[in-house]
Image (cartoon, rainbow, N blue to C red; front, side, top):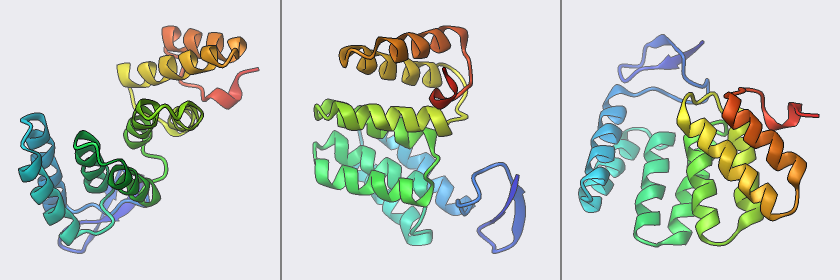
Length: 170
């Protein structure tokens, strides 16, 4: 638990990563933008995210979602720039690392994608099927590279739901 600043400037306990500033107003715009992305209203979502960033220029969720919009528009340079900025604001964000890995994989940058998935697994505390899916994606990339021991270890962990990071396997 850490202290984070709220929209009114006071410090309150938070379960979020210490590097993230909480802004209820900014978060509201990010949530609305995610809904608009789902509705394929990218222009409306982008406007909401820019508003969130005007309130908190280091909002990792806003930067990551802006990266997502640029990826959907096939603007690779801007997508990576925003995803990198989001990871600079919060280097341990599981979802952003996982999405960045997917984006790199679509660009056929398999080594970079694998590295991103492994970082997501290492840092990630994200529960549920997304964490397991990331392990499976990393396992498949290891398998494609002929790194069968690593592939089997990750696949086994995905099946068991083992929370250990990849570096702890021997």
